[in-house]
Length: 442
Image (cartoon, rainbow, N blue to C red):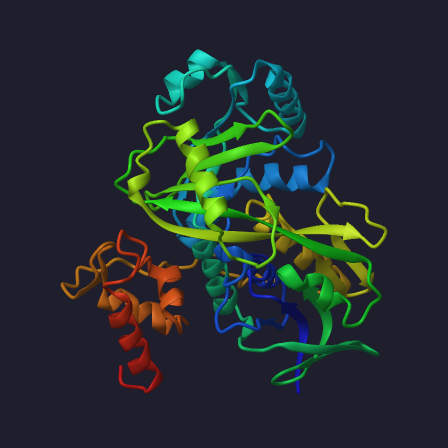
């Protein structure tokens, strides 16, 4: 049996940042993840947007963390050597009746402390983004909106956590949780863990993890959205574009990614199968994208995928609109149903849990915490494996050394398979390198 001060359950971006932030204090910690790698669930499929904070109710924890998290993103990504593009966003409408909604969002954003918000006329919006279909009635411009690669950020936080002392436990499933006199006993598919505090970051299953010990209090209902990815050579807008639909909420979203691709996201809908796309949904997304951006070259679509979002509800059916952070017993903390803007607030939420844990355990500050993590460097090696993205054999071997055990794991670390051929040319070679690594031949 392993004994530690704190155990983090879930190796998505929230769990990775919770584990990293625990290391600000003199604590022993493990990170438990049921998959073979981190950031393979919700983190691997989302819109990659760092939100400014005008959508959140003033005074809410979500509003506070979004604005603070957004403001600190440049420094965070510099520490972790992860690309970040503060490209700004436009929330556009073609319906004059929805203009008051834009003004309301701007006023709400200003209450939250979002800097630089500005209402634009339709002409100003079209001048800023010539790809937009003519006829824009108005737009809300938010210069602090940005985009980041979610899984690169999560993996960077994971590597930073491990560097500072967190012990990873991958391929490990939690099978039961028992209360002990001085903490909790986590029964797992591998080694059991005795810990003084638990940080539940179980993603889509965070409610079920908490229910291993406590009565049901919050339940997750899933919905999802489908996405299309265009080649980096495709013409794209310079800003993130949100289309304000005539009904409540947003329609299509167009995101120029840090890698150079254009990502298109549709309206969220109830789902039957997690992470599954539908022909109807993708056709609707493509049609709506062409309606918003008439000159968009849809022949340059190279990939489609689907995302899942956990929506928290109380047992009585009440929908929760702020971040749901449960604390059913001293030393047990759960992030349940963290959705948009969870990516923006991942570091803030991680620090929030870590600080509460440190207070509970009366832990001392750790002066040896090193916030810096080195990215996998680009090499001049002539042995290029992924021709589309220029990824070399040396870079792939470093990704494997850092923990990649699958072709997707390599992709999430160095970007192989992200180009026009989507790995059809390099996938076999990467799998061969992985196989050699498994047998100690490298």
